[in-house]
Structures are given as C-alpha cells and as structure tokens.
Amino acid sequence: MTDRRKLTCVHRVPNPIEANLLKGLLEHAGIPVEMTGEALVGAYSGLPKVGDVRILVPDRYLGAAQAILKDYENRIEPPAGDPWPCGACGEINEPQFAACWHCQQARSD
Image (cartoon, rainbow, N blue to C red):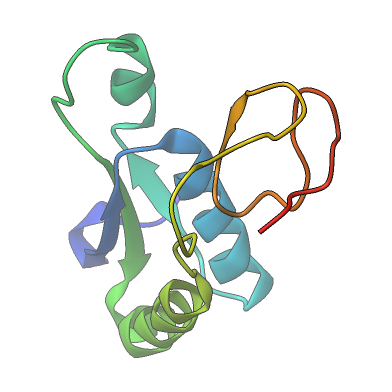
C-alpha cells in the first residue's frame, strides 16, 4: 500500500467499473494507484449519486497520470445523432447501433 500522505486525487468518476478501467490504464504505465469510495458508490445503486470513486496517485506520478487520463478522455466519442426506430420491429435503438438490437435488421437511413 502506498503512503496516503503522498497521494493526490488525479480523477473522480461516479462508476466503479470505469474507475477500475482507469486504474488498469495507469498501472499498465507503471503508476501505482489507490482508489477510495469504490465500495460506497456501489452501495447506493439505484439512488441519486452521493459520491465518486477517487483515483489517487503518488505526487511524483501526477503529471504522467494526468496525461494518460486526458488521452483517455479525448478518445471517448459521444454517440452521434438521435435514437432511431427500427423499420422492421419498431424498437428504439441507440444512435451508435448500425443494426437493431432486438431483431438485427440493418439500420436504414
């Protein structure tokens, strides 16, 4: 375990799954990581957000961790467009889907 007196919160996320993904990215780069709030966030499933998972790194890795996380955020693209109805079954699909999730009919634009 890392000495907590020398840790800085480099990022906060509301989702423990994403927090663990980011932890893996940082650890893959050789950056030691600790997280706080991971169990607490999961305990409030279905309720309004009351906290975040905090990702902590030693101060000497702060710059490198920030660069990795910035690159991660720049790669995330929000879905373009609006939800669309399937012409075959009428199911409403998310904009990133090229085929209906329900009946696999290809999207017709």
